[in-house]
Image (cartoon, rainbow, N blue to C red):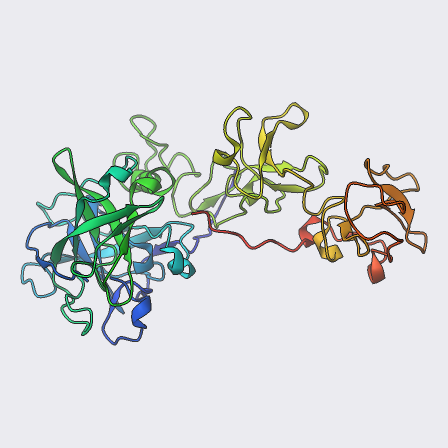
Length: 462
């Protein structure tokens, strides 16, 4: 196992100033209102909640919550382009007793994508590591790591933030305020809240949504997005759904006796110490890890081509059932369990090939394999597409393997033979009858290889 010195985009060490996207307040108003984040509307000033902080960068401000001695929870869109800044503890920029602490490190969820704002910005979650501990006497707030359910709909959460209190005139930034908001819906990754009278707005992004759990004020959401004008149904990012793939791994690496601090601790760790295990968060990408190293760049999703496990987010690369020369990213599965809960599209069946462990595979012909639909050779493993039948074809004859059942070895002229639908129309793929033109065209018999296939656009799983 070896490590590389690559620091991926979602890990930012302190450097020059920061640039904040959409949901943070800006002083010069260069962002269109529809793209700007959310301020407390209809609320009151809050002199409590000392753990709720104001994040300041070169271009504006956001809100956040101290959840560990040196760790602040906020929204990814507040820091995804930031390389530094400060966190203010106090009631606002006018508080003479406020204290500021510099930002040392930022990590946001690896699947966060600002272009997904139209569907509510899934994965809009980030953690900020402070250079120094929080001021004395300020205790971190607990966060909810248990699944939310629909029973919360109709109740209220308490939103706190440093945003504007006048959305139309964009004034009032920099003062801590609070407001109780109705919970309108619980979505797979989001909490819908607010109405035309009470809401969050620009500058509140990253701030907490508190809910009383067993008598304790607990963070269940992070202010994320909302409609233009800050009226209607706004959204917070649910904290609980990011427990295992983001929050706990990063907290473990940043806090406690097993954190990444140059000392390898082997006992009493909830998760392996990054100083002992390079596959844990340590700002370096390690290859050959059995599980995903969060420091590595985003790799392939289900069905994407791969050479080895490191090419896949699942760290599981498998050979196609109908053509072992084709490999794609998959995931382990159990044939006795519901497929939809284990296999991400386009994979739709769970099969143990050749006595190996069960894996998710395509339900039909593997894209690029013999008989798969195509419009040109770039979509085929062989580099050849039969244009008359619109299927990928493999060479045959002259000692090459026989054609699969349903196909026959037909001549395409120039001495080229390939497995295609026989002239009588019998076969496993539908298409026009008749002899096809030479599927290899001007490239002759050169095979393009699997990685010459056009990569499918990756869908963000939400």
